[in-house]
Length: 102
Image: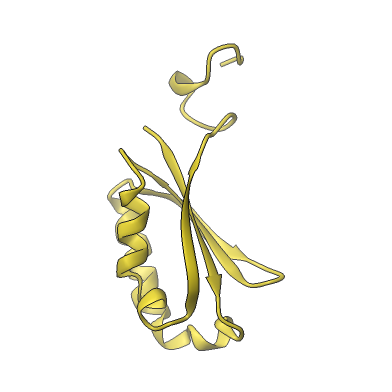
């Protein structure tokens, strides 16, 4: 199953501004992870941002997350993008691309 990277470009002062919305955001993160859609997520620094890696049939799994995220709804995310991500090392060995050692 394909992977997708969701990348957030956030507003200045994001770390402080996110505080009231963080519990709801983290709840959505945990729910997506429990469903097996969200593989990993974390903050980017210099400048601040976020990277969330999803796994699903298509990019809608990541798009749906972003559309429902309180950070997006509250205007803390200036823009977001979903990009297909081809994992070469670290995925399930049964999915290793041909020609690479398993």
